[in-house]
Length: 173
Image (cartoon, one colour):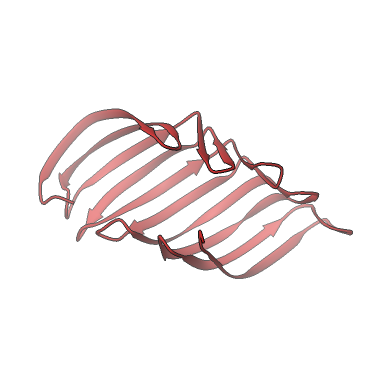
């Protein structure tokens, strides 16, 4: 990020990304490399990543930059996420607290998560909520989860409530 002081009263842009159009609004002031404080709003009708479609993502987050590291704190809501017939998540909501590295090539943070329903084939979890941590880069992201659900069905098993906690790791390759 440049070592430049800015005062942005109300900037808006629509980006035509490979995933789809994204509208961004930004207001804030301070040095972009250290001391910037502001607010970022984002919304899109639909974003597509491979076989996955993200419907109506929107965010309203506080933005801060300290020592070249941008951070974002606030709610991120999505109408639904669908990956073919394999995965569907209804009304996920995240309370995000994330920090990026100066090169914007790695991240770390935590947040609360809630979703009305998560379905993978015939398996499902409803009334999902809990906490998640994450740290990673373009090659791998890992963290912990502590989640509770309302009704759940996995193969022949059914439950009124479920809770699970543990570690995870995901990689795009």
